[in-house]
Amino acid sequence: MTVRVYSKKNTPAGDIYIVIENGILSALYMGEEDFLEGEEVLSLQFDPSDSLIKKCTIQLEEYFDGQRKEFDIPIEPHGTEFQKAVWKELCLIPFGETRSYQDIAVKIGKEKAVRAIGQANKANRLPIIIPCHRVIGKNKSLTGYAGTRTEIKEVLLSLEGANYIK
Image 1 (cartoon, one colour):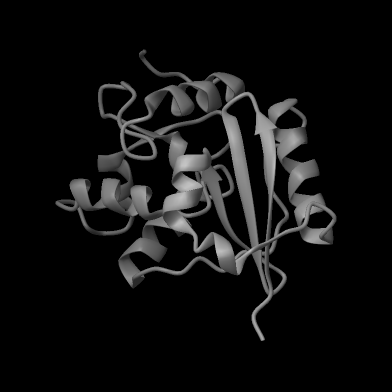
Image 2: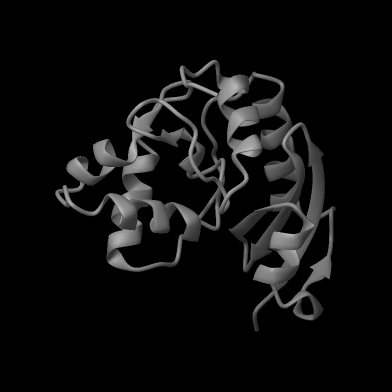
């Protein structure tokens, strides 16, 4: 039987919805709209007391307080092999640093797949944990985050002290 629980955490980047499925972090949604669009809410139980939700909440608080640079949360990202390769590469970008979409494409051996890198980032259900916000334009400009919401990317990169152009 699948057990799915969620909670909501208010952060400097807005409300984040935490979804746990069978003891693994399943998704982080940046805002209620994304949460309602991405989840079958009726199949979820609101449970802020769940031990993994508590752990995730604490680690997000530490991140937003500038005390945490890496997360220790069990995840199992679901996606295509290409998406998983992109997400694995994103996890190698250090806190406070950025890479371009082109950099990621080269690193995974798909030099011409720059737009596909953007689509893989958009499909990432674990933002912040898998730091897609650290991928910016080749000219250091902010480009889409969670679709078009670059203000979230700006909050996260500013928090990390990353070098980018507004």
